[in-house]
Length: 421
Image 1 (cartoon, rainbow, N blue to C red):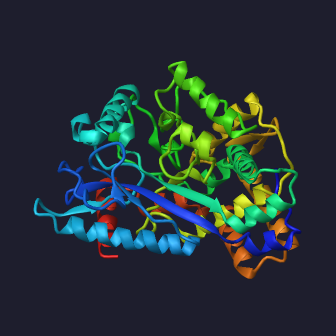
Image 2 (image 1 turned 90 degrees about the vertical axis):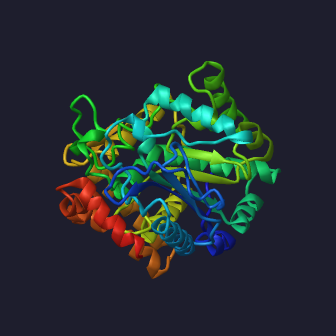
């Protein structure tokens, strides 16, 4: 399923859409240790926690543009940072990296405390801690939720062969999920921002300097198997996930650690996804970027939308089991720091990752030139191309150059600076 960009209505609404950001971070004390106090934002539904009690999750309301989403995230960042500075227990800060600061032991990583009607959430996190280890609970990232403008979907539906709008809409998002699975490694490669870490993060002598993003690499959260998903229909997609649950490979859909998820509106349940259809797609492969207070640049969010539009122009293809396994391998490869010898496998052919990324950006530029795209679009493409033409502009390279001494001390300098942002 593709968009036909010669359709005037599709052209009119292609740059509009819905954006939502979820930024994970850690609460730390002034000395850079993990805060051990209870979650201080129980009265704010926009500031929650995820795996552990000292992990904060800032959730923006839906926005109509990348710029608006970034502004909403900044507003919530300012609120959270100010509140942490005024805690009676002592000042706390928002940690600016995906990788955690120095860890003395797992007793510093309390599982998120939920009670009452939400006590099952705590039980689930205790299960994760036993299965995957507590250290991985400290990895933080940014999830980008995106939805197409309804008028764009309606325009595509009218010229499609579908006779049911919901089936068409589900098909669009299933196609997008498949293509992001195949090509989403590019987002990891262009946005990886975690090339420095404290040695306490890695065990058994593992070399953290191998990674531009440990959380997206083989050291991060991945299942003990490679999920093979079905994209033919939303029923087939959800049934495949249920099969993994019935087999005992995972205990819930949330344990399917995949870079892309299809989400329904409201509560995220498989039965809800099956009955009400797809509302948006979630991209989970973005690092917290310490080069900006909010952890992500507006340019990268806007580029993701352009990338999505480009992917929806491609001819339909099949992502078989081998291709899906290669796709997961490509994500992990894109998380490596040294790109000179790293290769991704596309269509059964191996190619140097920087060359493969350059090729995609070149075709994207040609695609948007054919649409007479506005200058802002080409500026966004140039922003990404500049990371490849001048490798010193890759976030991972810039960050390692800026912070290559005491990681925790460097992180606290940024945390204090960003608390004033």
